[in-house]
Image (tube, rainbow, N blue to C red; front, side, top):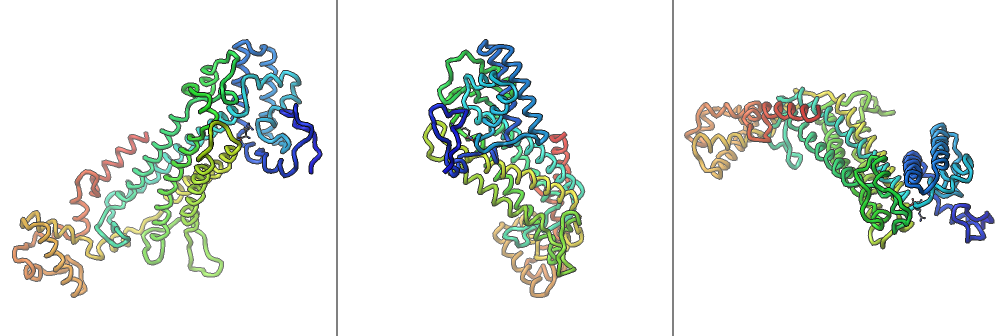
Length: 463
Ligand code: ARG
């Protein structure tokens, strides 16, 4: 049992301090100290507005501002003693401000509550993370574009069910990820746009009777406008849920390419080689090059998805408005954001450094009768067979090649004609993997000319 004195911030009606266990479960300073810059920026905007609106004196506002600048300096220098007894970042900053400037510090909290304060701080923080995710995604898209441009016409197997399906180009495969990451980027942009309303001035939950100017603080803090409903302002965390959801989708995309890297870099595939900078060795097996970074990236999705589910669970079913449950929002979002930024940077590095084994790609593309569909299409186009019949004829030719242990282009014309009499020499023009990919010029198809056009498009978009 702790015999500490009551909290100086709100302890007017308390005669004893909290139990040590109470303090441990209640305090958020260990993690919300990360919000110090946002908290101080919000307080500076608030104090300046209070003075302009005649709610506090110019002299007090000046003292508050100078004091807050000093607090920020101390925190930046690592000279600040964070106190668990003061619960959270808001009270830690204010208590230090009082030590520095004395009585005027007590006027800062006029027309404000920790409820709108934390809603503001957290929104500012998440907004910054959206910007960081957008920048990280742009860098990653550039790395994939570099790969796509270099290998616009390199042939590789395209897979369905991880079985060789049809030949595709390396560039096309890389561009598939550029499309995914572009959508991820747009999700962060959308989320940012929606969250860019300022909750400051909602006060505890009902607004305030002081003649504050919420439009002024919103503008100074870079928001498009103030939030329109004070209850909503202090009680919703949908901006954080949107950030987490967008992060989870993005991390899902990252994990899929990470998995491909793990498969492709194996001795059985040898499609790619990861650079030394992004591989590790084994302490016992000297031949090993392990794709640890890719594996970890694949796994880290779990943390981000976990954080997303955790915050949904916290917010679900909460009555309006603020409940202390909501303090549990921060650690989840902090961890997810850190994980995402690290993942984006690691993937960018891996993709930039990746060396591709063109020969292995092309050899794999030719295996497994990957141009069977081209043969069927040719029978439809040139001999006017119904597709179902063409499919049947092709199946027979695949079986023949399989029995002979050769590939489709290795069958002689006579052998082919035994299966269907009208097949001509021209059929060989569609059987090679190069011919196959070059023919797929439909919009969004894998042809090298499409890949080059799409690379040019994305380069222009990214500037
Ligand atoms: N540390 C709190 C949080 O993170 C700040 C808001 C506290 N408000 C309150 N009424 N106790 O949510």
